[in-house]
Image (cartoon, rainbow, N blue to C red; front, side, top):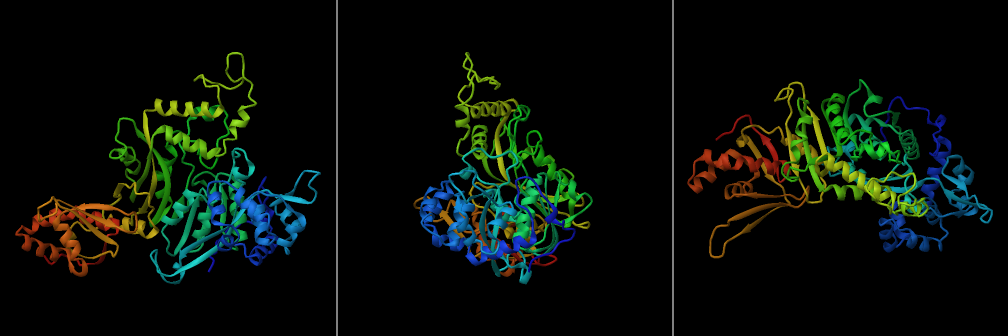
Length: 575
Protein backbone atom coordinates (compact mmCIF):
# COMPACT_ATOMS: atom_id res chain seq x y z
CA UNK A 1 0.00 0.00 0.00
CA UNK A 2 1.47 3.35 -1.02
CA UNK A 3 1.74 5.82 1.83
CA UNK A 4 0.12 9.21 1.51
CA UNK A 5 1.31 12.61 2.61
CA UNK A 6 -0.11 16.02 3.29
CA UNK A 7 0.73 19.36 1.78
CA UNK A 8 1.69 18.02 -1.64
CA UNK A 9 2.24 20.74 -4.21
CA UNK A 10 0.42 20.92 -7.50
CA UNK A 11 3.49 19.85 -9.45
CA UNK A 12 1.83 20.19 -12.84
CA UNK A 13 2.35 23.93 -12.41
CA UNK A 14 6.07 23.59 -11.62
CA UNK A 15 8.67 24.16 -14.35
CA UNK A 16 12.36 24.03 -13.49
CA UNK A 17 15.01 24.40 -16.17
CA UNK A 18 16.25 21.16 -17.74
CA UNK A 19 14.11 18.88 -15.61
CA UNK A 20 11.07 16.72 -16.38
CA UNK A 21 7.62 18.27 -16.21
CA UNK A 22 5.09 16.77 -13.81
CA UNK A 23 1.93 16.36 -15.88
CA UNK A 24 -0.16 13.69 -14.11
CA UNK A 25 -2.13 12.63 -17.19
CA UNK A 26 0.91 12.26 -19.43
CA UNK A 27 2.89 10.54 -16.69
CA UNK A 28 0.10 7.99 -16.26
CA UNK A 29 0.36 7.25 -19.99
CA UNK A 30 4.13 6.94 -19.75
CA UNK A 31 3.89 4.57 -16.79
CA UNK A 32 1.41 2.41 -18.69
CA UNK A 33 3.72 2.27 -21.72
CA UNK A 34 6.72 1.28 -19.61
CA UNK A 35 4.65 -1.43 -17.96
CA UNK A 36 3.33 -2.76 -21.28
CA UNK A 37 6.88 -2.83 -22.66
CA UNK A 38 7.99 -4.92 -19.70
CA UNK A 39 10.78 -2.43 -19.06
CA UNK A 40 11.97 -3.86 -15.76
CA UNK A 41 15.36 -4.80 -14.34
CA UNK A 42 14.77 -8.54 -14.66
CA UNK A 43 13.64 -8.16 -18.27
CA UNK A 44 16.77 -6.15 -19.12
CA UNK A 45 18.88 -9.13 -18.18
CA UNK A 46 17.11 -11.09 -20.91
CA UNK A 47 17.89 -8.63 -23.73
CA UNK A 48 21.36 -7.46 -22.66
CA UNK A 49 24.20 -9.93 -22.12
CA UNK A 50 26.08 -10.22 -18.86
CA UNK A 51 29.18 -8.96 -20.64
CA UNK A 52 27.37 -5.78 -21.67
CA UNK A 53 25.83 -5.30 -18.22
CA UNK A 54 29.26 -5.67 -16.62
CA UNK A 55 30.65 -3.09 -19.03
CA UNK A 56 27.86 -0.68 -18.07
CA UNK A 57 29.00 -1.06 -14.48
CA UNK A 58 32.35 0.29 -15.67
CA UNK A 59 30.62 3.23 -17.42
CA UNK A 60 31.16 1.65 -20.85
CA UNK A 61 28.08 1.57 -23.09
CA UNK A 62 29.45 0.25 -26.40
CA UNK A 63 28.79 -3.50 -25.84
CA UNK A 64 25.16 -2.81 -24.91
CA UNK A 65 24.70 -0.42 -27.84
CA UNK A 66 26.03 -3.01 -30.29
CA UNK A 67 23.63 -5.63 -28.98
CA UNK A 68 20.53 -3.45 -28.74
CA UNK A 69 20.83 -1.65 -32.08
CA UNK A 70 20.03 -4.96 -33.72
CA UNK A 71 16.77 -5.20 -31.74
CA UNK A 72 13.51 -3.33 -32.31
CA UNK A 73 11.40 -4.41 -29.33
CA UNK A 74 10.11 -1.52 -27.16
CA UNK A 75 12.31 -2.58 -24.23
CA UNK A 76 15.39 -2.34 -26.45
CA UNK A 77 14.40 1.05 -27.88
CA UNK A 78 13.71 2.50 -24.42
CA UNK A 79 17.00 1.18 -23.06
CA UNK A 80 19.01 2.60 -25.96
CA UNK A 81 17.32 5.97 -25.67
CA UNK A 82 17.17 6.58 -21.93
CA UNK A 83 20.02 4.50 -20.50
CA UNK A 84 22.61 4.52 -23.27
CA UNK A 85 22.06 7.96 -24.77
CA UNK A 86 21.47 6.65 -28.30
CA UNK A 87 19.28 8.47 -30.80
CA UNK A 88 16.19 6.67 -32.05
CA UNK A 89 13.80 7.25 -34.91
CA UNK A 90 10.52 8.96 -34.10
CA UNK A 91 8.57 6.03 -35.53
CA UNK A 92 10.40 3.60 -33.23
CA UNK A 93 9.76 5.81 -30.23
CA UNK A 94 6.06 6.09 -31.06
CA UNK A 95 5.88 2.29 -31.19
CA UNK A 96 7.68 2.00 -27.85
CA UNK A 97 5.39 4.62 -26.26
CA UNK A 98 2.03 3.98 -27.96
CA UNK A 99 -0.03 5.84 -25.34
CA UNK A 100 2.28 8.70 -24.43
CA UNK A 101 3.81 9.03 -27.89
CA UNK A 102 6.73 11.14 -29.03
CA UNK A 103 4.73 14.32 -28.49
CA UNK A 104 3.98 13.38 -24.89
CA UNK A 105 7.61 12.52 -24.18
CA UNK A 106 8.67 15.90 -25.61
CA UNK A 107 6.03 17.69 -23.52
CA UNK A 108 7.31 15.96 -20.39
CA UNK A 109 10.82 17.20 -21.15
CA UNK A 110 12.20 13.68 -21.53
CA UNK A 111 13.32 13.80 -25.18
CA UNK A 112 14.11 16.37 -27.84
CA UNK A 113 14.60 16.25 -31.61
CA UNK A 114 18.14 15.81 -32.82
CA UNK A 115 19.32 19.20 -34.05
CA UNK A 116 20.89 17.82 -37.20
CA UNK A 117 19.40 18.19 -40.65
CA UNK A 118 21.07 14.93 -41.68
CA UNK A 119 19.12 13.05 -39.01
CA UNK A 120 15.49 14.06 -39.48
CA UNK A 121 12.83 12.67 -37.16
CA UNK A 122 15.33 11.31 -34.65
CA UNK A 123 15.22 11.95 -30.93
CA UNK A 124 17.60 11.86 -28.00
CA UNK A 125 16.91 11.71 -24.27
CA UNK A 126 17.38 14.79 -22.13
CA UNK A 127 17.44 12.76 -18.90
CA UNK A 128 18.71 9.41 -17.71
CA UNK A 129 15.69 7.20 -17.06
CA UNK A 130 15.94 3.55 -16.12
CA UNK A 131 14.20 0.67 -14.32
CA UNK A 132 14.96 0.17 -10.65
CA UNK A 133 14.36 -2.94 -8.59
CA UNK A 134 14.68 -3.84 -4.91
CA UNK A 135 13.41 -6.44 -2.46
CA UNK A 136 12.21 -4.83 0.76
CA UNK A 137 10.71 -6.02 4.06
CA UNK A 138 6.94 -5.96 3.81
CA UNK A 139 6.74 -4.09 7.10
CA UNK A 140 3.26 -2.75 6.47
CA UNK A 141 1.98 -6.33 6.60
CA UNK A 142 3.61 -7.91 9.56
CA UNK A 143 6.89 -6.94 10.89
CA UNK A 144 9.63 -4.80 12.15
CA UNK A 145 12.85 -4.22 10.34
CA UNK A 146 13.71 -7.93 10.43
CA UNK A 147 10.47 -9.26 8.98
CA UNK A 148 10.72 -12.44 6.93
CA UNK A 149 7.95 -11.15 4.68
CA UNK A 150 9.28 -9.29 1.64
CA UNK A 151 8.01 -7.76 -1.56
CA UNK A 152 9.51 -6.70 -4.87
CA UNK A 153 9.72 -3.07 -5.94
CA UNK A 154 9.74 -2.26 -9.64
CA UNK A 155 10.14 1.45 -10.29
CA UNK A 156 11.58 3.82 -12.88
CA UNK A 157 14.00 6.54 -11.79
CA UNK A 158 14.93 9.69 -13.71
CA UNK A 159 18.07 11.73 -13.11
CA UNK A 160 20.53 13.80 -15.11
CA UNK A 161 22.43 12.30 -18.02
CA UNK A 162 25.68 10.65 -16.98
CA UNK A 163 29.11 11.54 -18.32
CA UNK A 164 29.09 8.14 -20.06
CA UNK A 165 26.41 9.60 -22.34
CA UNK A 166 27.46 13.24 -22.53
CA UNK A 167 31.18 12.53 -22.78
CA UNK A 168 31.85 15.60 -20.65
CA UNK A 169 32.18 16.71 -17.07
CA UNK A 170 29.04 16.85 -14.94
CA UNK A 171 27.13 20.12 -14.77
CA UNK A 172 27.39 21.94 -11.40
CA UNK A 173 23.72 21.32 -10.56
CA UNK A 174 23.86 17.67 -11.66
CA UNK A 175 21.23 15.42 -10.07
CA UNK A 176 22.56 11.93 -9.42
CA UNK A 177 20.71 8.70 -9.98
CA UNK A 178 20.92 5.74 -7.62
CA UNK A 179 24.61 5.30 -6.78
CA UNK A 180 26.72 3.41 -4.29
CA UNK A 181 26.23 5.84 -1.40
CA UNK A 182 22.46 5.89 -1.97
CA UNK A 183 22.35 2.09 -1.98
CA UNK A 184 24.37 1.91 1.24
CA UNK A 185 21.97 4.24 3.01
CA UNK A 186 18.96 2.37 1.63
CA UNK A 187 20.24 -0.92 3.00
CA UNK A 188 21.07 0.37 6.47
CA UNK A 189 17.85 2.35 6.98
CA UNK A 190 15.57 1.01 9.72
CA UNK A 191 12.43 -0.33 8.05
CA UNK A 192 9.35 -0.49 10.22
CA UNK A 193 6.05 1.42 10.21
CA UNK A 194 6.50 5.09 11.10
CA UNK A 195 4.11 8.01 11.09
CA UNK A 196 6.52 10.58 9.65
CA UNK A 197 9.88 10.59 7.89
CA UNK A 198 12.25 13.13 6.36
CA UNK A 199 14.69 12.67 3.49
CA UNK A 200 17.07 15.63 3.72
CA UNK A 201 19.09 16.17 0.55
CA UNK A 202 16.74 14.07 -1.56
CA UNK A 203 18.53 14.20 -4.93
CA UNK A 204 16.51 12.07 -7.34
CA UNK A 205 14.20 11.01 -4.49
CA UNK A 206 15.11 7.35 -4.09
CA UNK A 207 15.39 7.53 -0.27
CA UNK A 208 12.05 9.33 0.02
CA UNK A 209 10.37 6.77 -2.22
CA UNK A 210 11.63 3.90 -0.08
CA UNK A 211 10.46 5.75 3.03
CA UNK A 212 7.00 6.01 1.49
CA UNK A 213 6.73 2.21 1.51
CA UNK A 214 6.61 2.13 5.32
CA UNK A 215 5.92 5.69 6.52
CA UNK A 216 2.54 7.43 6.45
CA UNK A 217 3.92 10.90 5.71
CA UNK A 218 7.19 11.64 3.90
CA UNK A 219 8.86 15.01 3.41
CA UNK A 220 11.78 15.36 0.99
CA UNK A 221 14.00 18.44 0.91
CA UNK A 222 16.97 19.65 -1.10
CA UNK A 223 18.80 22.92 -1.61
CA UNK A 224 18.70 22.21 -5.36
CA UNK A 225 15.46 23.15 -7.11
CA UNK A 226 16.40 20.72 -9.87
CA UNK A 227 16.75 17.86 -7.39
CA UNK A 228 13.35 18.70 -5.92
CA UNK A 229 11.78 18.60 -9.38
CA UNK A 230 13.34 15.24 -10.21
CA UNK A 231 11.98 13.90 -6.92
CA UNK A 232 8.50 15.19 -7.75
CA UNK A 233 8.66 13.60 -11.19
CA UNK A 234 9.90 10.23 -9.90
CA UNK A 235 7.24 10.15 -7.19
CA UNK A 236 4.53 10.87 -9.77
CA UNK A 237 5.93 8.33 -12.25
CA UNK A 238 5.77 5.63 -9.58
CA UNK A 239 2.33 6.69 -8.33
CA UNK A 240 3.24 7.90 -4.86
CA UNK A 241 2.87 11.23 -3.13
CA UNK A 242 5.75 12.91 -1.34
CA UNK A 243 5.84 16.41 0.15
CA UNK A 244 8.82 18.00 -1.63
CA UNK A 245 10.29 21.28 -0.34
CA UNK A 246 13.31 23.31 -1.45
CA UNK A 247 15.71 24.74 1.10
CA UNK A 248 18.94 24.30 3.03
CA UNK A 249 19.35 21.57 5.63
CA UNK A 250 16.46 21.69 8.15
CA UNK A 251 15.10 25.10 7.11
CA UNK A 252 12.16 23.68 5.10
CA UNK A 253 10.93 21.71 8.14
CA UNK A 254 11.47 24.30 10.87
CA UNK A 255 9.38 23.48 13.93
CA UNK A 256 8.58 19.92 12.81
CA UNK A 257 9.72 16.59 14.23
CA UNK A 258 9.93 13.15 12.64
CA UNK A 259 10.08 9.50 13.60
CA UNK A 260 12.86 8.87 11.08
CA UNK A 261 15.33 11.13 9.29
CA UNK A 262 17.67 9.84 6.59
CA UNK A 263 20.24 11.99 4.86
CA UNK A 264 23.02 11.57 2.33
CA UNK A 265 24.18 15.20 2.57
CA UNK A 266 26.79 16.97 0.41
CA UNK A 267 29.59 15.95 2.76
CA UNK A 268 32.65 16.11 0.50
CA UNK A 269 35.44 18.12 2.15
CA UNK A 270 36.11 20.84 -0.42
CA UNK A 271 38.82 23.53 -0.05
CA UNK A 272 37.57 27.10 0.18
CA UNK A 273 40.25 28.04 -2.36
CA UNK A 274 38.48 26.02 -5.06
CA UNK A 275 35.23 27.83 -4.33
CA UNK A 276 37.07 31.15 -4.49
CA UNK A 277 38.45 30.27 -7.91
CA UNK A 278 34.91 30.05 -9.24
CA UNK A 279 35.37 26.42 -10.23
CA UNK A 280 32.23 24.56 -11.14
CA UNK A 281 31.71 22.63 -7.91
CA UNK A 282 29.02 19.98 -7.82
CA UNK A 283 26.00 20.86 -5.69
CA UNK A 284 25.23 17.25 -4.82
CA UNK A 285 28.52 16.84 -2.95
CA UNK A 286 29.64 20.34 -1.88
CA UNK A 287 27.58 21.80 0.94
CA UNK A 288 29.38 25.15 0.93
CA UNK A 289 30.82 24.78 4.44
CA UNK A 290 34.47 24.66 5.45
CA UNK A 291 36.19 21.36 6.12
CA UNK A 292 33.83 18.74 7.68
CA UNK A 293 31.61 21.39 9.24
CA UNK A 294 28.51 20.23 7.38
CA UNK A 295 28.60 16.76 8.93
CA UNK A 296 29.08 18.28 12.39
CA UNK A 297 26.18 20.68 11.80
CA UNK A 298 23.78 17.92 10.75
CA UNK A 299 24.76 15.77 13.74
CA UNK A 300 24.20 18.62 16.19
CA UNK A 301 20.97 19.92 14.63
CA UNK A 302 19.36 16.57 13.85
CA UNK A 303 18.17 15.61 17.34
CA UNK A 304 16.02 18.76 17.52
CA UNK A 305 13.93 17.42 14.63
CA UNK A 306 13.33 13.96 16.09
CA UNK A 307 10.42 12.84 18.23
CA UNK A 308 11.42 11.03 21.45
CA UNK A 309 12.60 7.60 20.33
CA UNK A 310 13.04 8.81 16.74
CA UNK A 311 15.99 7.81 14.55
CA UNK A 312 18.38 9.70 12.28
CA UNK A 313 20.73 7.92 9.88
CA UNK A 314 23.34 9.58 7.70
CA UNK A 315 26.48 9.03 5.64
CA UNK A 316 29.46 11.32 6.09
CA UNK A 317 33.18 12.05 5.88
CA UNK A 318 35.38 13.51 8.60
CA UNK A 319 38.94 14.74 8.90
CA UNK A 320 41.56 12.93 10.98
CA UNK A 321 44.55 14.99 12.19
CA UNK A 322 47.98 14.00 10.88
CA UNK A 323 49.29 13.31 14.40
CA UNK A 324 46.49 10.82 15.16
CA UNK A 325 46.36 7.11 14.35
CA UNK A 326 43.47 6.92 11.83
CA UNK A 327 42.44 3.50 13.14
CA UNK A 328 42.52 4.12 16.89
CA UNK A 329 42.22 7.89 17.35
CA UNK A 330 39.77 8.90 14.63
CA UNK A 331 36.85 9.27 17.03
CA UNK A 332 38.50 11.99 19.15
CA UNK A 333 37.36 14.83 16.85
CA UNK A 334 33.83 13.46 16.59
CA UNK A 335 33.08 12.94 20.28
CA UNK A 336 32.53 16.66 21.05
CA UNK A 337 29.98 16.81 18.22
CA UNK A 338 27.63 14.71 20.34
CA UNK A 339 28.27 16.62 23.56
CA UNK A 340 25.02 17.26 25.46
CA UNK A 341 22.95 15.98 22.55
CA UNK A 342 20.04 13.83 23.84
CA UNK A 343 20.80 10.86 21.59
CA UNK A 344 22.36 7.45 21.68
CA UNK A 345 24.58 7.07 18.63
CA UNK A 346 26.49 4.41 16.72
CA UNK A 347 29.27 5.88 14.61
CA UNK A 348 31.10 3.57 12.22
CA UNK A 349 34.21 4.34 10.18
CA UNK A 350 34.11 1.97 7.21
CA UNK A 351 37.08 3.27 5.24
CA UNK A 352 40.10 5.54 5.60
CA UNK A 353 41.81 7.39 2.75
CA UNK A 354 44.92 9.52 2.78
CA UNK A 355 44.44 13.04 1.36
CA UNK A 356 45.82 12.11 -2.07
CA UNK A 357 43.47 9.13 -2.39
CA UNK A 358 40.55 11.26 -1.27
CA UNK A 359 41.25 14.00 -3.82
CA UNK A 360 41.72 11.49 -6.64
CA UNK A 361 38.43 9.79 -5.83
CA UNK A 362 36.39 13.00 -5.99
CA UNK A 363 38.18 14.38 -9.05
CA UNK A 364 37.38 11.12 -10.82
CA UNK A 365 33.79 11.30 -9.58
CA UNK A 366 33.33 14.72 -11.16
CA UNK A 367 34.83 13.74 -14.51
CA UNK A 368 35.17 9.94 -14.85
CA UNK A 369 35.96 10.19 -18.57
CA UNK A 370 38.53 12.95 -18.00
CA UNK A 371 36.81 15.35 -20.36
CA UNK A 372 38.92 18.06 -18.75
CA UNK A 373 41.90 16.80 -20.74
CA UNK A 374 40.15 17.73 -23.99
CA UNK A 375 39.40 21.20 -22.70
CA UNK A 376 43.01 21.56 -21.58
CA UNK A 377 44.18 20.91 -25.14
CA UNK A 378 42.59 24.22 -26.10
CA UNK A 379 43.99 26.22 -23.17
CA UNK A 380 46.05 29.28 -24.01
CA UNK A 381 49.62 28.61 -22.88
CA UNK A 382 51.74 31.74 -22.43
CA UNK A 383 55.45 32.22 -23.07
CA UNK A 384 56.31 31.20 -19.51
CA UNK A 385 54.55 27.88 -19.98
CA UNK A 386 51.69 28.85 -17.65
CA UNK A 387 48.03 28.72 -18.64
CA UNK A 388 46.76 32.16 -19.49
CA UNK A 389 43.91 33.19 -17.18
CA UNK A 390 44.40 30.22 -14.83
CA UNK A 391 46.15 30.76 -11.50
CA UNK A 392 48.88 28.13 -11.21
CA UNK A 393 50.93 28.65 -8.03
CA UNK A 394 52.44 25.16 -8.29
CA UNK A 395 53.98 25.43 -11.76
CA UNK A 396 51.75 22.71 -13.19
CA UNK A 397 50.94 23.33 -16.82
CA UNK A 398 49.43 20.01 -17.81
CA UNK A 399 45.80 20.50 -16.79
CA UNK A 400 43.30 22.37 -14.66
CA UNK A 401 42.66 19.01 -13.04
CA UNK A 402 46.23 18.82 -11.73
CA UNK A 403 46.07 22.39 -10.45
CA UNK A 404 42.88 21.55 -8.55
CA UNK A 405 44.58 18.40 -7.24
CA UNK A 406 47.56 20.40 -5.95
CA UNK A 407 45.39 23.07 -4.31
CA UNK A 408 43.27 20.42 -2.64
CA UNK A 409 46.35 18.66 -1.22
CA UNK A 410 47.82 21.96 -0.05
CA UNK A 411 44.58 22.73 1.77
CA UNK A 412 44.67 19.41 3.63
CA UNK A 413 48.33 19.93 4.51
CA UNK A 414 47.70 23.45 5.82
CA UNK A 415 44.97 22.09 8.09
CA UNK A 416 47.21 19.25 9.34
CA UNK A 417 44.86 16.60 7.95
CA UNK A 418 46.51 13.20 7.70
CA UNK A 419 43.51 11.12 6.62
CA UNK A 420 39.80 11.27 5.91
CA UNK A 421 37.39 8.85 7.52
CA UNK A 422 34.32 7.64 5.65
CA UNK A 423 31.37 6.04 7.34
CA UNK A 424 27.91 6.45 8.79
CA UNK A 425 26.11 7.72 11.86
CA UNK A 426 22.94 6.28 13.36
CA UNK A 427 21.29 7.93 16.34
CA UNK A 428 18.16 7.56 18.43
CA UNK A 429 16.71 10.42 20.45
CA UNK A 430 16.26 9.55 24.10
CA UNK A 431 12.85 9.24 25.66
CA UNK A 432 12.14 11.80 28.37
CA UNK A 433 12.32 9.20 31.13
CA UNK A 434 15.18 7.15 29.69
CA UNK A 435 18.18 6.23 31.81
CA UNK A 436 21.06 8.62 31.43
CA UNK A 437 18.98 11.79 31.44
CA UNK A 438 19.83 14.25 28.71
CA UNK A 439 23.21 12.66 27.99
CA UNK A 440 23.33 9.92 25.44
CA UNK A 441 25.68 7.02 24.88
CA UNK A 442 27.95 7.01 21.84
CA UNK A 443 29.75 3.95 20.54
CA UNK A 444 32.47 4.22 17.88
CA UNK A 445 33.42 1.26 15.69
CA UNK A 446 36.12 0.80 13.07
CA UNK A 447 34.76 -1.74 10.60
CA UNK A 448 36.89 -2.28 7.51
CA UNK A 449 35.27 -5.54 6.40
CA UNK A 450 33.71 -3.86 3.37
CA UNK A 451 30.28 -5.08 4.43
CA UNK A 452 27.27 -2.90 5.18
CA UNK A 453 24.81 -3.33 8.04
CA UNK A 454 21.13 -3.77 7.38
CA UNK A 455 18.44 -1.75 9.11
CA UNK A 456 17.89 -4.56 11.61
CA UNK A 457 21.59 -4.48 12.51
CA UNK A 458 21.44 -0.73 13.13
CA UNK A 459 18.33 -0.93 15.29
CA UNK A 460 19.74 -3.81 17.33
CA UNK A 461 23.06 -2.03 17.91
CA UNK A 462 21.34 1.11 19.16
CA UNK A 463 19.20 -1.00 21.49
CA UNK A 464 22.35 -2.73 22.77
CA UNK A 465 23.77 0.60 23.93
CA UNK A 466 21.15 0.52 26.70
CA UNK A 467 21.89 -2.92 28.11
CA UNK A 468 21.56 -3.19 31.90
CA UNK A 469 24.66 -2.69 34.02
CA UNK A 470 24.32 -6.29 35.18
CA UNK A 471 24.12 -8.74 32.27
CA UNK A 472 23.39 -11.62 34.62
CA UNK A 473 19.62 -11.22 34.25
CA UNK A 474 19.70 -11.58 30.45
CA UNK A 475 18.71 -14.72 28.62
CA UNK A 476 20.65 -14.85 25.35
CA UNK A 477 20.44 -16.87 22.14
CA UNK A 478 23.44 -17.49 19.93
CA UNK A 479 22.87 -16.50 16.27
CA UNK A 480 22.94 -19.37 13.79
CA UNK A 481 25.75 -17.84 11.72
CA UNK A 482 28.31 -17.69 14.55
CA UNK A 483 31.38 -19.92 14.24
CA UNK A 484 34.47 -20.23 16.39
CA UNK A 485 38.11 -20.43 15.32
CA UNK A 486 40.74 -21.85 17.70
CA UNK A 487 44.53 -21.71 17.49
CA UNK A 488 46.76 -24.13 19.37
CA UNK A 489 50.46 -24.24 20.04
CA UNK A 490 51.57 -27.69 18.83
CA UNK A 491 51.49 -30.23 21.63
CA UNK A 492 49.29 -28.18 23.98
CA UNK A 493 45.72 -29.20 24.87
CA UNK A 494 44.27 -25.71 25.32
CA UNK A 495 43.86 -23.02 22.65
CA UNK A 496 45.90 -19.85 23.03
CA UNK A 497 43.69 -17.83 20.65
CA UNK A 498 39.92 -18.06 20.18
CA UNK A 499 38.00 -15.95 17.65
CA UNK A 500 34.27 -15.85 17.03
CA UNK A 501 33.20 -15.05 13.47
CA UNK A 502 29.93 -13.63 12.21
CA UNK A 503 28.53 -14.84 8.90
CA UNK A 504 26.04 -12.00 8.36
CA UNK A 505 25.82 -8.36 9.43
CA UNK A 506 29.19 -6.64 9.26
CA UNK A 507 30.99 -9.99 9.27
CA UNK A 508 32.78 -9.22 12.50
CA UNK A 509 35.48 -11.28 14.18
CA UNK A 510 35.78 -10.90 17.96
CA UNK A 511 38.55 -12.40 20.08
CA UNK A 512 37.27 -14.18 23.19
CA UNK A 513 38.53 -16.25 26.10
CA UNK A 514 37.57 -19.72 27.25
CA UNK A 515 34.94 -18.42 29.68
CA UNK A 516 33.19 -16.37 26.99
CA UNK A 517 33.35 -19.30 24.58
CA UNK A 518 31.74 -21.57 27.14
CA UNK A 519 28.97 -19.06 27.90
CA UNK A 520 28.22 -18.42 24.22
CA UNK A 521 28.05 -22.15 23.61
CA UNK A 522 25.38 -22.45 26.31
CA UNK A 523 23.28 -19.49 25.14
CA UNK A 524 20.24 -21.32 23.81
CA UNK A 525 17.55 -19.16 25.42
CA UNK A 526 17.06 -21.42 28.43
CA UNK A 527 19.38 -20.08 31.14
CA UNK A 528 20.31 -16.58 32.26
CA UNK A 529 23.85 -15.31 31.79
CA UNK A 530 24.28 -15.28 35.56
CA UNK A 531 23.34 -18.96 35.81
CA UNK A 532 25.70 -19.94 32.99
CA UNK A 533 28.50 -17.86 34.51
CA UNK A 534 28.06 -19.63 37.84
CA UNK A 535 28.33 -23.01 36.13
CA UNK A 536 31.49 -21.95 34.27
CA UNK A 537 33.01 -20.67 37.52
CA UNK A 538 32.31 -23.97 39.25
CA UNK A 539 33.76 -26.05 36.39
CA UNK A 540 36.93 -23.94 36.22
CA UNK A 541 37.30 -23.54 39.99
CA UNK A 542 37.08 -19.75 39.83
CA UNK A 543 35.16 -17.08 41.69
CA UNK A 544 31.85 -16.15 40.06
CA UNK A 545 32.71 -12.47 40.33
CA UNK A 546 35.96 -13.02 38.41
CA UNK A 547 34.19 -14.86 35.60
CA UNK A 548 31.48 -12.23 35.29
CA UNK A 549 34.04 -9.41 35.24
CA UNK A 550 35.99 -11.20 32.49
CA UNK A 551 33.02 -11.85 30.22
CA UNK A 552 31.11 -8.57 30.60
CA UNK A 553 32.85 -6.51 27.90
CA UNK A 554 33.10 -9.23 25.22
CA UNK A 555 29.48 -10.28 25.78
CA UNK A 556 28.35 -6.68 25.20
CA UNK A 557 30.39 -6.60 22.00
CA UNK A 558 28.84 -9.87 20.83
CA UNK A 559 25.34 -8.53 21.54
CA UNK A 560 26.02 -5.29 19.66
CA UNK A 561 27.31 -7.31 16.72
CA UNK A 562 24.21 -9.50 16.66
CA UNK A 563 26.16 -12.66 17.41
CA UNK A 564 24.11 -12.97 20.59
CA UNK A 565 20.46 -11.95 20.73
CA UNK A 566 18.56 -10.93 23.86
CA UNK A 567 15.62 -13.27 24.40
CA UNK A 568 14.41 -12.03 27.79
CA UNK A 569 15.58 -9.87 30.66
CA UNK A 570 14.36 -10.52 34.20
CA UNK A 571 14.41 -7.71 36.72
CA UNK A 572 17.29 -9.19 38.68
CA UNK A 573 19.81 -11.94 38.13
CA UNK A 574 19.08 -15.15 40.01
CA UNK A 575 22.80 -15.59 40.71
